[in-house]
Image (cartoon, rainbow, N blue to C red; front, side, top):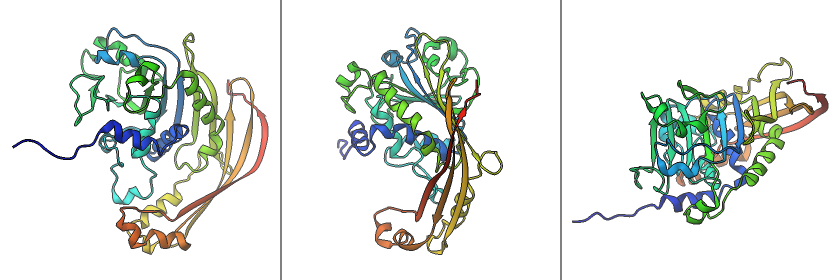
Length: 352
């Protein structure tokens, strides 16, 4: 008797997923995942630097020590998150919370493969590297295509200093547990693209800069419907510089109090009724948000927005409880929102 059965080609599966998530949506997916985790701060950095390759826990990852696209958020990976990110088709959520989240580490996370073949991240005391090709890490297989490393294990930081160096960003020292999460997406080179089974398209630093600039320009719109995040910052770190440079930042506050906005009221009400959508009444919430951008040494347009959201009414509710829809394994949420720019004014930036 021999082994037999249907198998999934992981690279093919990821390639299929990325066709439904355009490259330009990458950073928006990352910020949404961070918001779902309860983060309040989200940062992006295009790192033009290259790092050493002589002390690597995985020698074949030397080709991934070059320029990268990095994100930071101040939420910590939970045990459930570590399990969830290992699933391609969807994130692992409880029934009560799944309907109120837009896909923490579901298929959207895989938009990261638009720019890299080896996404990595650190949180708590762990460095995680994902290798769908099973070509860059030692002792990986199609059933376990990645590695989780305790970087605080005695001797690890000294023996594999080059491997850890790219993660010493956003204030992370790699000397203590990180009470946050940093993703590093090493940009796919021409050589890697030539052999990649995920994408034959390289991502140059210039192409990544376009993604970063577009995200920076869209910060006010990105921030409108986030639940927890109130501070967003975008940086670049040039190869010759000793530290990163702020490209653009945004702080969102409650217009009335000046404090971080409490935008969780609607979500809390939704969660309390999610055990039975048929019993959900109409829930509404209206918030006035003040947004103050920052640019290094320049001026920016401060703005006031009104954001209105509603859940539970009309045809949307009928569709959400339709049995035929549920039979397909789908759970639409009868939720909508609209925003309006009320005022915008030019203000000097005194952040420096």
